[in-house]
Amino acid sequence: MNARTEPSQAAPSAIARPPLVRELLLVAGLFLVYKLGRQLATGHTGEAFRNAHRVWDWERILHLPGEGSVQSLLLHGDTLAHLANTYYATVHFPATVAFLVWLYLRRPAHYVWARRVLAVVTGAALVLHLVFPLAPPRMLAATGLVDTAQVYGPSVYGPPRTDTLSNQFAAMPSLHFGWALMLAVGLIVATRSRLRWLWLLHPVLTLLVIVGTANHYWLDAVVAGAMLGVALAVIHPPHRTATTAGRGQETLAPADEQVLVGAGR
Image 1 (spheres, rainbow, N blue to C red):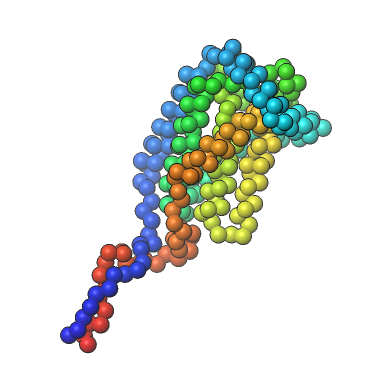
Image 2: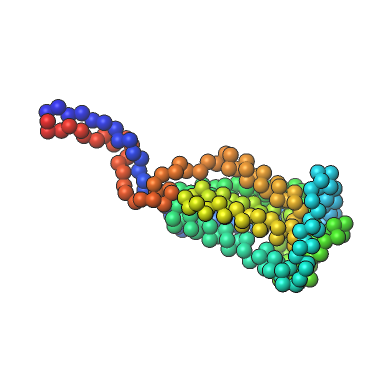
């Protein structure tokens, strides 16, 4: 009998899905740490407004377009402003949760990657919120912008002095934009559809909404995008395979398993 062995060239296609309870606890824990951390940044009103004037001046030095040019488009009618406020208030968090749930169920390897990236970006954002409190443009009289949420509704914020549920001086970076951009990047990487690039409309629309409603400066989005870029450069997505791309469910032999060839000759 003349038998020889050859290593299999294929890697397993089955990607282990992380335990659901562990993931729920992990994500909930990260969210609570972030919310508690944001509360630590409250009470720096004077510093937040000084930083707001600095950011406004920096944007003028950089010749960035005025936020008012976007807001003027929303103020042509009550309906458009109301829709923008509704988008700001209701899309951000549910869209991110839906994104993670879909990846968890359909692309487990990409889910782990996306969760790590979002955790890093959110953690870095928390640090910046603590060291650089920033009042949003809707609070800065020098901008001449309207607080569209207060005028047209709906609003997710109360008066800054009595609002104990949120930190309104955490404008930079904009996690609305950072998370929206990661959602688009994640779905583009994890899927194969020719239409997947249309997901970029989500961060584009989010950017117009956060600026037009005077909740963020342009630089808030620039910093969020830069943070995401660094995180993506460090945390790489999984290699595309039949399973990670959603194609095929066949189970292949492990790479280190020896396959018997030529037995019985």
